[in-house]
Length: 195
Image (cartoon, rainbow, N blue to C red):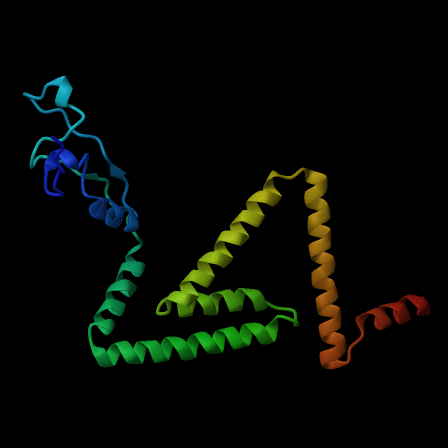
């Protein structure tokens, strides 16, 4: 005769509940599924936790810097109040929009345009999930590109760096030419022709 085991039956559950493991891993903790040795357990039932004695071993969470803990606590206190939650969303939206707009304005000019755009995304990511996902996507691809470039040979890295410098120089030249009517190439050719 076949019987279905219930979800409460300890023999049906080989380890700690998946919900506890997922939530511990989500918080950044390392989870060990090892069962400690207990006196009285036979080797035949050593792979199966005894009823009511399953152990979830969770490593300590990596400590965050104190300033990040304070900011996180302050944001949680603000979010606890409905008015504070709405105000925080509005302030984060406005400050993030200002930083992103300034970054977009600085992209064609010499300056940290892309850095400010990413910083604005970081500000938005405090409160908005779509910005957090976009920031994670950007971070993941930048790290992948950096790791790929590090694995390449020195001549190829030199070519990649040269292409990057050529691209940045072209952007600076075009932005100065069309934004401020300053043609650096013409000025350089006139200077070289006069000598």
